[in-house]
Image 1: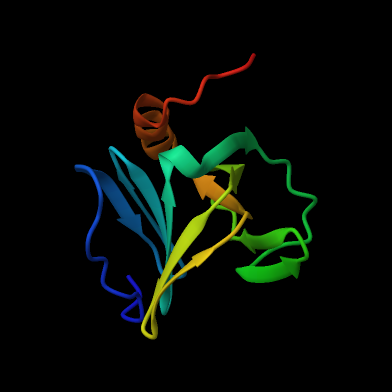
Image 2: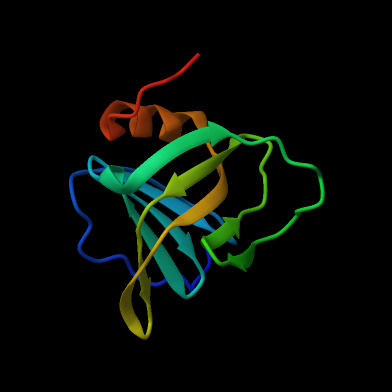
Length: 131
Protein backbone atom coordinates (compact mmCIF):
# COMPACT_ATOMS: atom_id res chain seq x y z
CA UNK A 1 0.00 0.00 0.00
CA UNK A 2 1.17 3.51 -0.82
CA UNK A 3 2.07 5.68 2.21
CA UNK A 4 0.95 8.82 0.34
CA UNK A 5 -2.77 7.99 0.60
CA UNK A 6 -4.71 10.63 2.54
CA UNK A 7 -6.31 9.15 5.64
CA UNK A 8 -10.03 8.64 5.17
CA UNK A 9 -12.21 10.31 7.79
CA UNK A 10 -15.94 10.72 8.05
CA UNK A 11 -17.03 7.76 5.95
CA UNK A 12 -20.82 7.80 5.56
CA UNK A 13 -22.62 4.54 6.14
CA UNK A 14 -21.19 1.24 7.30
CA UNK A 15 -17.82 0.19 5.88
CA UNK A 16 -18.26 -2.94 3.78
CA UNK A 17 -14.94 -3.47 2.01
CA UNK A 18 -11.73 -1.58 1.28
CA UNK A 19 -8.90 -2.49 -1.08
CA UNK A 20 -5.76 -0.45 -1.58
CA UNK A 21 -3.02 -1.23 -4.06
CA UNK A 22 0.18 0.67 -4.84
CA UNK A 23 -1.32 3.30 -7.15
CA UNK A 24 -4.98 3.51 -6.05
CA UNK A 25 -7.61 2.08 -3.77
CA UNK A 26 -11.38 1.67 -3.44
CA UNK A 27 -13.46 1.80 -0.28
CA UNK A 28 -17.13 0.86 -0.39
CA UNK A 29 -19.69 1.59 2.31
CA UNK A 30 -23.46 1.32 2.44
CA UNK A 31 -23.76 4.98 1.29
CA UNK A 32 -20.71 5.86 -0.82
CA UNK A 33 -17.65 4.82 -2.81
CA UNK A 34 -14.24 6.37 -2.13
CA UNK A 35 -11.57 6.29 -4.85
CA UNK A 36 -8.14 6.74 -3.25
CA UNK A 37 -5.12 8.11 -5.07
CA UNK A 38 -1.90 9.32 -3.51
CA UNK A 39 -2.60 12.71 -1.89
CA UNK A 40 -6.34 12.77 -2.77
CA UNK A 41 -9.61 10.91 -2.12
CA UNK A 42 -12.67 11.18 -4.36
CA UNK A 43 -15.88 10.56 -2.40
CA UNK A 44 -18.83 9.52 -4.57
CA UNK A 45 -22.20 9.20 -2.86
CA UNK A 46 -24.57 6.62 -4.32
CA UNK A 47 -27.21 9.36 -4.68
CA UNK A 48 -24.86 11.23 -7.05
CA UNK A 49 -24.05 8.25 -9.30
CA UNK A 50 -25.73 8.54 -12.69
CA UNK A 51 -24.49 5.24 -14.13
CA UNK A 52 -21.90 2.50 -13.94
CA UNK A 53 -21.27 0.75 -17.26
CA UNK A 54 -18.66 -1.74 -18.49
CA UNK A 55 -15.73 -0.08 -20.23
CA UNK A 56 -13.85 -1.49 -23.17
CA UNK A 57 -10.32 -0.06 -23.09
CA UNK A 58 -8.65 0.75 -26.38
CA UNK A 59 -5.27 -0.28 -25.00
CA UNK A 60 -3.75 3.20 -24.91
CA UNK A 61 -4.22 4.01 -21.20
CA UNK A 62 -1.80 2.23 -18.93
CA UNK A 63 -1.53 4.56 -15.93
CA UNK A 64 -3.47 6.99 -13.77
CA UNK A 65 -4.27 10.29 -15.41
CA UNK A 66 -6.67 13.21 -15.26
CA UNK A 67 -8.25 14.80 -18.29
CA UNK A 68 -10.22 18.00 -17.86
CA UNK A 69 -13.18 18.78 -20.09
CA UNK A 70 -15.62 21.66 -20.07
CA UNK A 71 -18.38 19.34 -18.82
CA UNK A 72 -16.33 17.53 -16.17
CA UNK A 73 -13.13 15.70 -15.42
CA UNK A 74 -12.15 12.12 -16.20
CA UNK A 75 -10.05 9.87 -13.96
CA UNK A 76 -8.46 6.76 -15.47
CA UNK A 77 -6.97 3.95 -13.39
CA UNK A 78 -4.74 1.13 -14.54
CA UNK A 79 -6.61 -2.03 -15.47
CA UNK A 80 -5.90 -5.13 -13.42
CA UNK A 81 -6.25 -8.74 -14.44
CA UNK A 82 -8.56 -9.55 -11.49
CA UNK A 83 -11.07 -6.76 -12.15
CA UNK A 84 -13.22 -5.64 -15.07
CA UNK A 85 -13.03 -1.92 -15.90
CA UNK A 86 -16.17 0.19 -15.47
CA UNK A 87 -17.02 3.78 -16.39
CA UNK A 88 -18.70 5.47 -13.45
CA UNK A 89 -20.53 8.78 -14.06
CA UNK A 90 -21.31 11.01 -11.07
CA UNK A 91 -23.15 14.32 -11.02
CA UNK A 92 -21.12 15.52 -8.02
CA UNK A 93 -17.90 14.39 -6.34
CA UNK A 94 -16.31 15.53 -3.09
CA UNK A 95 -12.52 15.74 -3.09
CA UNK A 96 -10.48 15.34 0.10
CA UNK A 97 -6.84 16.37 -0.17
CA UNK A 98 -4.17 17.56 2.22
CA UNK A 99 -5.32 21.13 1.42
CA UNK A 100 -8.91 20.48 2.50
CA UNK A 101 -12.25 19.46 1.06
CA UNK A 102 -13.97 20.74 -2.08
CA UNK A 103 -16.95 19.74 -4.18
CA UNK A 104 -16.56 19.19 -7.92
CA UNK A 105 -19.34 19.04 -10.46
CA UNK A 106 -19.89 16.20 -12.92
CA UNK A 107 -17.05 13.73 -13.23
CA UNK A 108 -16.42 10.31 -14.69
CA UNK A 109 -14.06 7.58 -13.58
CA UNK A 110 -12.75 4.55 -15.46
CA UNK A 111 -11.84 2.06 -12.77
CA UNK A 112 -11.16 -1.65 -12.52
CA UNK A 113 -13.70 -2.79 -9.94
CA UNK A 114 -13.22 -6.32 -8.59
CA UNK A 115 -16.36 -8.52 -8.56
CA UNK A 116 -16.48 -8.51 -4.74
CA UNK A 117 -16.67 -4.71 -4.62
CA UNK A 118 -19.09 -4.56 -7.55
CA UNK A 119 -21.47 -6.91 -5.70
CA UNK A 120 -21.48 -4.61 -2.67
CA UNK A 121 -22.01 -1.53 -4.85
CA UNK A 122 -24.92 -3.25 -6.60
CA UNK A 123 -26.49 -4.22 -3.29
CA UNK A 124 -26.44 -0.74 -1.71
CA UNK A 125 -26.45 1.76 -4.61
CA UNK A 126 -30.05 1.26 -5.69
CA UNK A 127 -28.98 1.24 -9.34
CA UNK A 128 -30.87 -1.10 -11.65
CA UNK A 129 -29.13 -3.40 -14.09
CA UNK A 130 -30.24 -3.04 -17.69
CA UNK A 131 -29.60 -6.23 -19.70
